[in-house]
Amino acid sequence: MPVPPRTVPSSLDLHGVRWLRSSYSTGANNCVETARPASGPPAGLLAVRDSKAPAGPVLLFSPASWTEFVTAVR
Image (cartoon, rainbow, N blue to C red; front, side, top):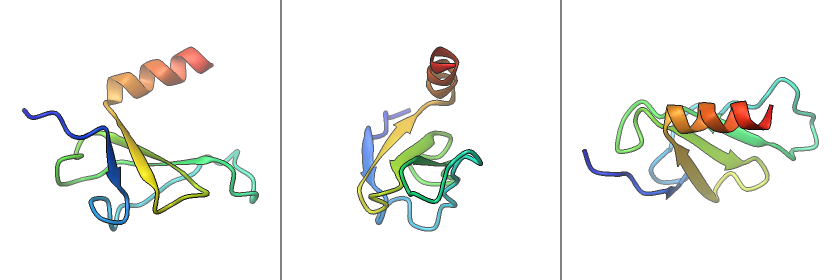
């Protein structure tokens, strides 16, 4: 399986995905948003973006990498 790019422009390749914010997020728009693309090269990966720059770059993580990261920051 080819390795997907580490970042993709959200306005192009991830158009139409449902972005989610933590319930702990405030209305200050200073958080990250996540999405799980269902199709295309990023399918099966977790997409993460800055809520202040929704058209900016998106980081892609494998489910295992994201779980490891969240476990480490807890």
